[in-house]
Image: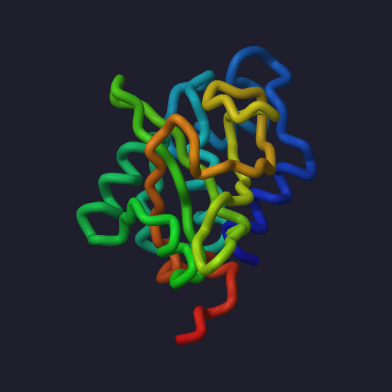
Length: 170
């Protein structure tokens, strides 16, 4: 199974905040996995847990979206161009807020027209049906790339469990 498959299982379950803000038995376990305090935001913890479950070695398991982003950037595996998603076998997306926080999730699908990615289907933790980064559980969403956030993308193709799209035809 890929890391995305594990996220989709949590969406289907569904994982929801049942014991207060950022809390449920499942969310608490996900936060514990990365060493986050109970009740902490869990978007990055959810992504990390999924890669762990898929058997990825060397993935930067963390409860911080900006830590994961920085790790990929240091290795030249971050892009600001959505069309790079057409070259990769799997990807994460996210954004950074001016307050040092942000959000991260899986790019499950790429919606394109004329060879350009216009929107993405996602699998995300700590969101809601409106796409808030302070959400109520795990959801599958469709996000337009013409939003208010400057979105970055991380190439996870090299990790075990990080390839959920067929290889790009060259």
